[in-house]
Amino acid sequence: MHAERPRSRARTASLGFTTIELLTVLVIIAILAGIAAPSFRPMLERWRVRNASEAMVSAVYYARSEAIKRGGNVKLQKIANNTDGCTLAATNEDWGCGWGVYSTDTAGTATLLKTFAIPANVTVSIKDNTGSIPIDRWGTLTGVSTKGIAMLPAGGSNSSPAAVGLCIAAGGRIKVIGNPPC
Image (tube, rainbow, N blue to C red; front, side, top):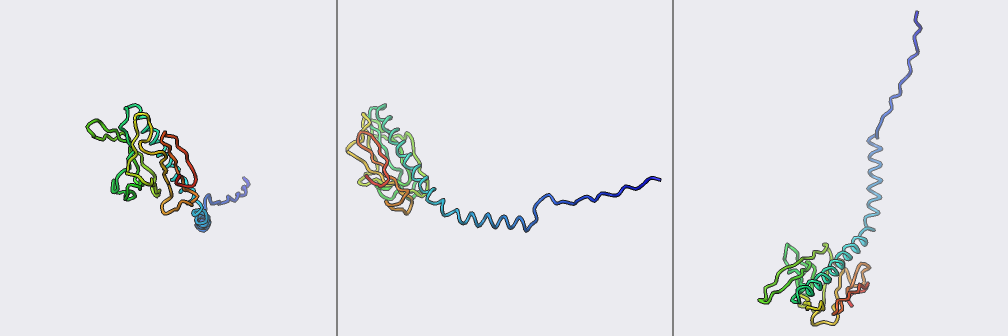
């Protein structure tokens, strides 16, 4: 007769993780994330402040070019407090809700040309300000020799590593410094 072949024993291998292995990996990831998360805060603060300072630099350059193009009557103006739920602009010195570039016609009617939003949790202040910065037909800031702008993380101080100061000369030259204001 025919000889029987010995049956090969098939291995039954599991192609996945057991519940205990999966939970162990998740616990290790949670512990590492808990250790790493606090170190991201300063990085996020610096990123937010840098974005706000870049928005201000862009707004000044845009306002100057529009003033030259339109023959003056352009101003950079803070967005009012309680606009879109923002409450970071309580005084004329607080620009935490963002700002816009406006053109004013001969009748005194202001037209919004462009708005500049800033990230949340950033404090922007311009000392001795009326809430707007007029720019004349030559692209210079009217009535000032230098404008100092402090940008800080919310609740931060001028000594915060993320703090940035912008010094804007009347002619439009902008210098970014680490210790606000100018």
